[in-house]
Image (cartoon, rainbow, N blue to C red):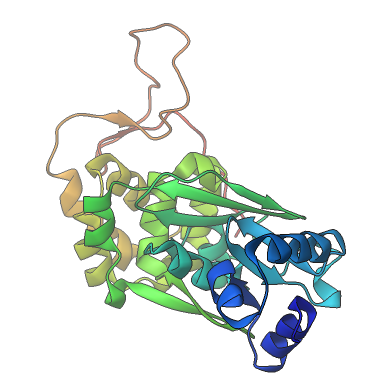
Length: 272
């Protein structure tokens, strides 16, 4: 009679590193209670990890120190199990596209539904909510990239979408200085026309901030592609809205950038 141990071994031999409760129960002659008890034993032996109810990751010996394999290896089957579209973005996507400064201590995934973060072993998966309408407009196949792992492929933001996601959620991308470094590292890889098209789905303030940061890094073609967005407003907004003026009601700073309609209230530091 095949056991859960046998099932796990067969999965690994077949090249699979994840399975669902429903899949296993359909193949094993176990009652629901017996299966749950067997799962509990495997998890306690650190042979399985359970990031979401009903979804299990098979841990190879080399995975057990970190508590789980790299999330890139199992995020795609997890999201398919949840029936949800997604894109890996921000710091992990920036690192994938060549921003060597990004250690990507957190694995960030943009989704059209509210989810709590997953902390599993040394890994932290942060789900960033984006309204379903805007998500569907931006999560187009031609604007995405594939992150290859030994377990297959995961869906990630392309260079242009990564830059725009980082500036929209700049606080989660280590702040304005962090995004400035990302813009410097990968900005020249962005297709200017595609960048401008995708930018239409982002807030004007975010687009102007990105344009300013691209200018600082001398990525002229990419910055020029976004410059028309600055012509759509006469209002000056702070480069870093998280920095407040010392006295409420006063200007954020004495330095204004007319090209991008920005109040430069933060000194940007970039490693060249």
